[in-house]
Amino acid sequence: MPQIEATDVYLEFPLYHAESRLLKKRLASALQGKTGGSVGTRFAQDARSRTVVDVLRGIDFTAKAGDRIGLIGRNGAGKTTLLRALAGIYEPVRGEIVVRGTMGALLDASLGMNPELTGRENVRLFVQQGEGDLSALDAAYDDVQDFAELGHYFDLPIKTYSSGMAIRLAFAMATTSAPQILLMDEWFLAGDGVFLKKAETRLKRLIDKVEILVVSSHQPEILARWCNRVIWMEQGQIRADGPCEDTLQQYKNF
Ligand SMILES: Nc1ncnc2c1ncn2[C@@H]1O[C@H](COP(=O)(O)OP(=O)(O)OP(=O)(O)O)[C@@H](O)[C@H]1O
Image (cartoon, rainbow, N blue to C red; front, side, top):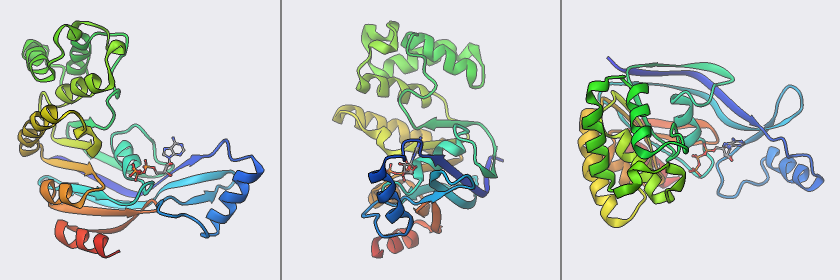
């Protein structure tokens, strides 16, 4: 059975450009909690007195088959970083993340794609790196080509694509077969109207098949639609974790 287990996960990014006097002054007031506006980020100092962004602090949760988890929280709360840590892109500085099962990630249009290779060659790489079933390659080419509608661009290097074209290709590729666990940033559904509709239909089919979904969004309506559980993040911590309606209500009241 697929599962994600995050135990006491901490992640921080050092701020290497925090040396100017003005920036230091601003960070000092942020450290004292005087500022922050609508941004859910927390600054701190590490053991070597370097200024760091405390992005994840003591994250603990388990996701099991059947969980459709929405991550909600203000800008900078740590949602994208958590998704990236679950995908293995970032290594926690403390704690651990154990993932069991095949995983697909719709996080970044360029993630895992080689800009020098054509769309077709990238599909080949993707299939090879995934389950490696090359007998499924022709079907994957047809499926991706048909869905992404890139025309002759499918056989051109993807560095020549517009960002919208790159998103179409990445989306089509990542959804060509269903992983057991799917991680997704909501912005992935950005695109022109027709594509959005097509993407939604395809995504719905995929989500019905995946066993665990973790999706980040600012929009409660989107989470209410796709999820059965919501984790509310604030300043790198989990503020609430529970059934979709309950957590969204707490978030809205806040
Ligand atoms: N590579 C990095 N170096 C330094 N700081 C970073 C880096 N990546 C993210 N951060 C900071 O970590 C904090 C959390 O960022 P993250 O993107 O995870 O938040 P988020 O909840 O997804 O925000 P949003 O809703 O705005 O996308 C932010 O303050 C961000 O500036």
